[in-house]
Image 1 (cartoon, one colour):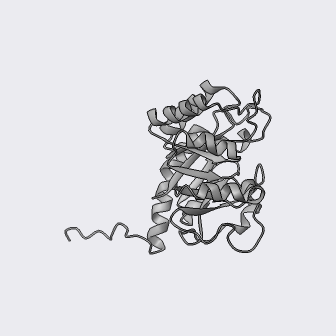
Image 2 (image 1 turned 180 degrees about the horizontal axis):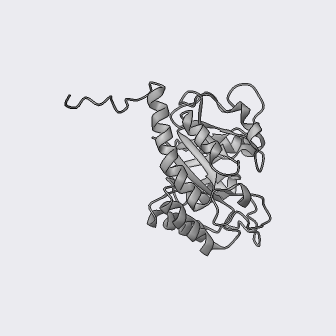
Image 3 (image 1 turned 45 degrees about the vertical axis):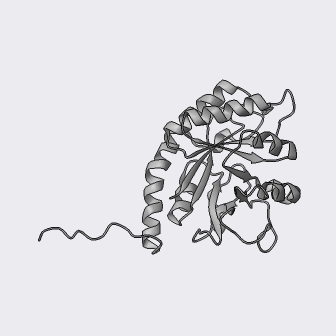
Length: 244
């Protein structure tokens, strides 16, 4: 089974009624996870200032809409904040792997499943050791937005012993569908109510709308299933053996 993540991030722009609506629409569009960013533009007065009470509300809203809450951890204070609401899994952004390896180790020490984007990683090998059942590496191009030619390095096959999934920054859902056709078990795409909305960040234009995410949910999962059958990773629908 693949996991589809609606990366709400900062697309609420500091309006928490909008955050609620983004969670609601992500759930209705078929997202498995609604993800936020903890520790980025988070000072008092900034658009992503999340208090402990607000963190609890975000988690409660996700629970109500039956979509899993997840946070990207960008600082030690963010880790403290997220831990209070007891998420099942964590995400590590590309910059954090390079800038704060000790923080990454702290998150891994929780023993929970952790997804690490490697958009900034330019060294050989895996930064935190080989993949395991709780350490998942995510292919990512850290360009906002990413244009199609930049995906030339996309893995030809995803799997538990290599890149496990894909974090998308292309316009639309083409990159996500391509990754799913190659067996990505985890696909993350930014999520917005309005691509044309302007903010202090560039995320809206490269985000999926609810309608696009619904297409990703419907067609992407089918493509993923077919991909796994053709790769011999799972059994598929057999040839019709009915009455002749």
